[in-house]
Length: 431
Image (cartoon, rainbow, N blue to C red; front, side, top):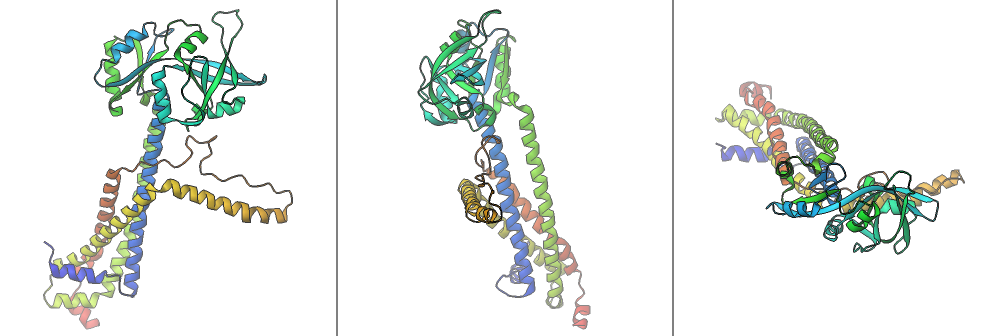
């Protein structure tokens, strides 16, 4: 049990109102805990955000679960779709067709594309997950949606016609060329998709590829994405292995495993950072025991037991950890919530320096100096995302705070043991 007298002495030792050297060292230790906790929260939130953002984009294009027909596709897809919808955990089930083709605009501009034919009900997923840049998502027969990079590369614009070229249905036939009107241009924020994806109605895709009343597969949305593997097994067993069934996790399994490993590495790095912080706390407490040794001797002389001295310095470690964890958590949460605004502000500031200082200086020494390219943390043609995605998980905040307090308390034990073993007679004699 903590004695009030020990708590009072501990608070007095670690008081930040004094101007002595020990107080300054204590403040530095506290600051290191605050920085460590805040940094840990921001870094792990960004890691969680990357994983969540990528998952949402993949689900937006495909689905939680995808059922694919073996061979040419699913001929009785309407019956299968209606049957799948009967599962209580199925939120949505819609057929689609998918195939490869070419887009041609202005004669010479040709780009490969992944053509996806969907139902009007499936368009809502695109509206919810992807940003519309131009036009509208509400396509009709003879209209097509293009992803951002694909539209740019082929020179397409909303309201203009574009030629879609697909492989002939039989050998020896000429390629099938069909004109579609560009209804809208959208961005998935995922570079691989933005460079190839085109979307039209299912009926147009079936006619384009001359497959008749056949669907390539069925997109299934469920009520809990964390149970997709169990749900996929139920669907697979329901049809006796007639169809191939896979989940959004199967699509990019290696990538998601790499991202989970990345979070583990991040946590290891942050752990090492706190180890360094612990040495600072040990140094602070060691300095404090030396500075306060005469007071420790007096406390022992008036009846304080070694356990009381130990408790005083452990209290200091706990207080440092608690204060640092609370302040660090608040700062980390605030930075995470406002990270997008902070990022854009930093980009504007860096670009201001580039355009108003760096470029004029370079131009002064070299008249052929090029105008600097706009600085961005994430370039859309290189990265999957365009800004820092974040997902704040309060479980992470809780464990980081507990761990920081534990490290601070543990680091205080060694100096506390040393202080508790001091001999008051020897100290007072030397003083």
